[in-house]
Image (cartoon, rainbow, N blue to C red; front, side):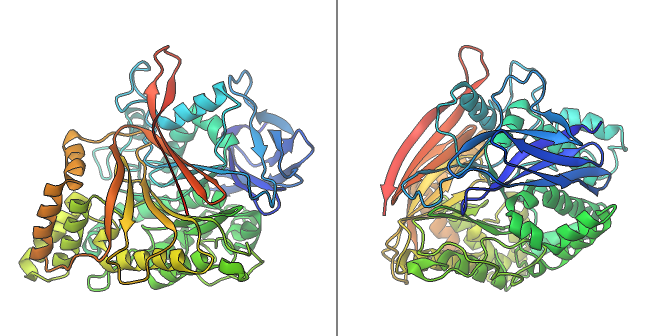
Length: 584
């Protein structure tokens, strides 16, 4: 009898018709996977194999628009989900009512979840897990509004920071005194990280009943992934690196990327078809990962999702970089053009011929015109970028200084010093790619100033292990200021920690003294001050947390919830630290 090894994860729910969804599973052997819904909807898919593991992405059809139905998972006809004796409510699929523009869209988001279980069940050294707290809150109070989508903005797994339990398991496979030591080395070891993360009982139930969108950040591969050309040359000369990067991209494609795609996009994906048709798809996926690492322009990990009149653009800020000094960019030209095109598509009633999202394996420009999307514009734009666009002012100035000095503005000696600092200090956000920062700002201004502009534009980010809200001041920006209300919403970690010295550094970064010191760095680097100003309007907050945006009509409501231990001893709870609202 086939068993359920991982999942189910409810991933894509069709907002255009309200009749379809996808569910991701891993089984322990080849089998027929089935989702069977209480209302008669369902779907089946045969598993496919990667490195001895068996997966399926099950398309569910026949759902009732505007409804909610309990579902079961069966493998070869035998029920494997829900688990016997589960303390959680039944997993359900909730579908939108197409055309119900007045209905709110609830988007929860965060990043940086170190999934290591505490050695002492009564004390978690990094505090309560915000996803556990969200799951417990929803399970205890089914009447509480559930997120329509959970956006995970990177560092879903930590390949370079393994738990004590995982290190013990790694030691049974290889000698940990040999590189990469206690970090993961290959695909099999990556699967261990996903088991540790997604078999957490609360998180497993949560991901089975709340649709999710995901994108990688550095720790999904390694800290500071693709920081610079010098970093990349050093890593590519490291004997264990090739296996690590290929395994990281392969495991991301399997566990995260496929679920971001709609059934139509999956059906059009040539690699997915090749893997499903093969007795073993490992080599085909490995060859793809090698191409993706060698040439970022041959793939696209970014994607688009429309939730009624809310548009999400998830932007790859790791693998799509150009690293050569002199032409460094957060996004290569085709990727940046794609972001702009998708943000403008369908505005002011113009037809939207761009397919909502393009598979990484079809690449930029391939099948971009397959089928109509939303027409008549949208009310809210969400730009999901794991790395914040607007940083504390001192941090922004140091990163722009660093980019200038690394590029040779102060000579070779200072370039070497700055490169060392860049790699040691994680100086690799949008500010560290100044032309890309300006290009993203121009895109936001263009979209926000266009006919039929959205009411709000929110840049959703994580990475920096604290939360804050920032708003730009467009009065000195050269382009026409946007009419849209624009916010930088940064929220992390979901479950991790931050050193006290770094907390102080981020607080200092927003201060007047930080701004003054930043001006000295800019002067040394011969960097002109950005024409864009911004101010912090909330935070910083530290601890494990999630933000939720509720988008209704032309209004956005933001709530920040922090995870705390329940005084009654009944697990974790969410405590609201901020509520704010704005409208366009």
